[in-house]
Length: 216
Length: 343
Ligand SMILES: Nc1ncnc2c1ncn2[C@@H]1O[C@H](COP(=O)(O)OP(=O)(O)O)[C@@H](O)[C@H]1O
Ligand SMILES: [Mg+2]
Image: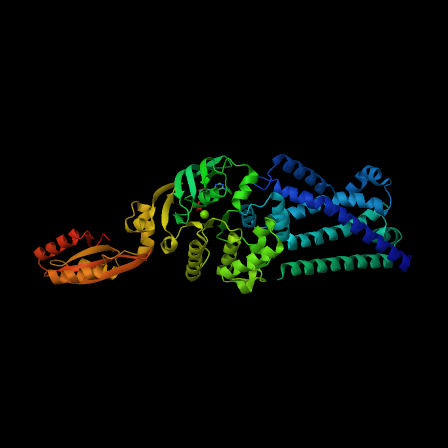
């Protein structure tokens, strides 16, 4: 084995940092976009087909670009935002552009699952669109949103491993530079095992939290 | 008071136009329980949803307590909505919130202070008989209990109008009855005007004061429940009335009538209120030389007045039967000869 445990722990911390920060920014981007995708559609709270169509199109474009290409294509943007295109912080930018639109779609799906009758009841009470979103739609969709975030987070773990390939650091970086390029099977095995444990843990936690919220 | 003036609603979807409401004129007085009945697709939901502008009328006016709604700005309409409670067929409760929070919701939206909300919600839950269920979630309740929560929620802001769109259609007959009694209690204790939409004539019979029959987006008949039940004018109304009045002759009696010929004649006597059947029959049996045989009877109560019909066989000389009939006619009681096939 060509790496020591310190390197592994350092890589693990980098991965957690990348995932945590990109998740944070992705949610800040994806949640409002997802809400907008729902409420601007035809017949909804604040119908606005121009906004809806533009959002829908842009999100589709980002969603259809493979992450590895997005990673490279975003380099100038990354450099503009964080000043460099290498390192953990720099990796966050493409990750957000990858996960943000994805989360928007997931949020859209979750919110569309809320029974239209609930919105109708809210409107009958004289709730404002803002109140309907915050007091009806989001609470009713919460359990489903938690599951959606779990999926997005797991997606980010995978993507962050890939981001490592362009100098982002983290577990993926370790796996590729040692495990793959230097044929270090044990390092490969350990890094993959760590990723598996992370994904399993996240999924279990997400399921548990969603169930707690749904109380069933 | 709710008033519809020449109300029209046309839905446009994928190039197709559906006229759901086709010139509705209707006035619902303060404190009334008004029922609108019609078959599926008649436009009932469209009509009730126009009252609180969940649906925007294509043309025409909706006037509530003198205010024309369609011309009000959005903000003002939200205010008006707080004066109109609504109860739904499928309850439309928030499953993520407790019974307490569901009932509190309209007050929370209106930014009423916490202590006051608490007091009001407990009062409401007490009223609908769910005082012990405040911390439950809707999925732990039966259909009837969910509807009670829906009703409590609709009453939270002390509205003067309550709209019920098929509020009992998802419930079994017994639960339906208890919910209807609750609505009646609300009407009597709080003097709230109630507009009920239904496809079940039993709902109308049980609690409504007035009824309108809607078909193809038009009101085809309207009147007091008593008048419409005792003398329905349109085929649709007759149809609805027959679903609860059951004045069809049972098969066995039909057979009996067919077999008989000669001196027996069979009549249907409709009676209303105190001109009820039994005293009349005994009177006739005494006064005239006819034998009476009651084959079939059906009595219900409408707004506290007995109402029904009897199928009676008259046996005797033609002359005596005729005298008896003349006597009945003089009393202004409706009597009609029935033949085997026409009933
Ligand atoms: N949102 C809608 N878009 C298009 N057509 C509708 C819509 N809502 C109702 N309709 C049509 O309008 C007519 C009346 O519907 P509705 O008012 O729901 O009747 P009811 O409640 O008596 O069953 C029906 O033909 C129905 O298909
Ligand atoms: Mg309907």
